[in-house]
Length: 292
Image (cartoon, rainbow, N blue to C red; front, side, top):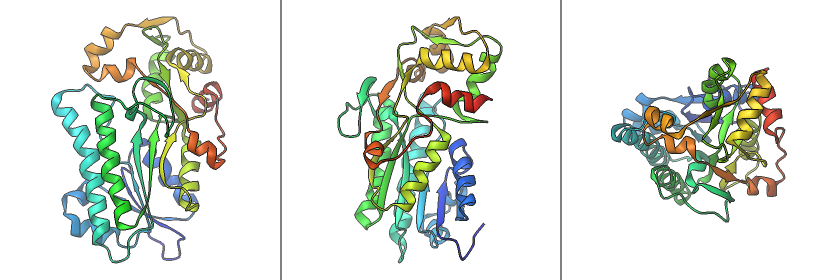
């Protein structure tokens, strides 16, 4: 709801998703005004989108079709276009405004990086597959905002852990039934962040104008698929003896199975250099909080 005396007015795409709904609640607690940008706003043309955004001093871009789905060529196109076209539309709309927003924060993902690691913002290898190219193009479109004088931040998300949604919610049912297990040998890295820390990073970036550029939004301590499995089993008090063969994932997710059977070890080096203090740095602590 718009409030004329709000310290910030934030226009947000992807507000109905798991991360967006949590950020929305966090911003409202700060008494910041929220302008929700839905699909129809992006279909109505750049001029009408700009009109809706005209009072915003901050743009938060979270839009993008889910990646944990069966990948067909048609669905890969949907994933790609939902990210690139909306990012492009936001920047074009900003360019139309006489009074431009001060800040654009756009989401990206650790799929930007090649499997393995460790990767930091400054020292890394890029993924050469579909996810990597999508993340690179996604970021490139958002960074166009810098050319029109808008402070721009890209957050490369690890897997976001929180209550009531996201990847964790998809896992819990099978684990509660005692059907949880590692994928393959479980050695693949798993980079994650607790929703509490994610929302606090956003708040810090909004309030501190020295934040700009690329940041890894991950816990300082990544784990492995096996470490995640054992920690979730312990949090739920359930066994985790099963092993899920990779071919089973390929049958369900197609090409998208590669995202689940590989992983990246990603270090939030720039956040640590900023002095950001994570509340959740260990996977067991994070999962205990999410499932209790």
